[in-house]
Amino acid sequence: MQTLSSMQRNRFNFRFVKDTFSILMLFCYEIATMCCGILPPLLGLFFAYVTILEYEKHEKHIAFGASWYVAVVFLLCAEQIHGYALFCVALSFFIFYFFIFDYLLENIKFRNLLLVSIVCIAYLLIVAFNNLFCYILQQDGMNIGYEYLIFMGVESVLALLLFRGRIL
Image (cartoon, rainbow, N blue to C red):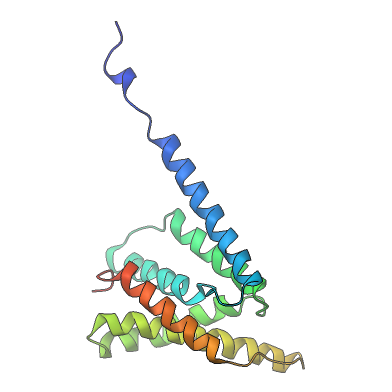
């Protein structure tokens, strides 16, 4: 007669398949944003997500999980797919988190506005560092057009839906 413990369902395989499928869908979406210019590249959303995970690590002393590494790899791949200079997203994140985030956290009491400002500042810093690198290399820089404002708006709404209540 089988014991009850050997009849239990193994959820690890399902979670692994679900996580792998989610990661593949994210990268397929990122490739689709390259082909179709109206889709937002989700740079600001993942920038906010990495910021929230970093904040939770320092406040709650929680170690980084696989989601943090997936988000960082996604940001690095997205910057290359969309033609930004190598590591301008990483440099933007370090400058933002260590110099700007604490100031915003202390002065903005309305946390939904904090999420929106993280997404908008992320785009502004990424484009600013990309243009700085292009200036140093004597290449043409990127211009901020109306599509960046649309991307900021869409990703701000997504950040409010996904991350509300994560920064207290």
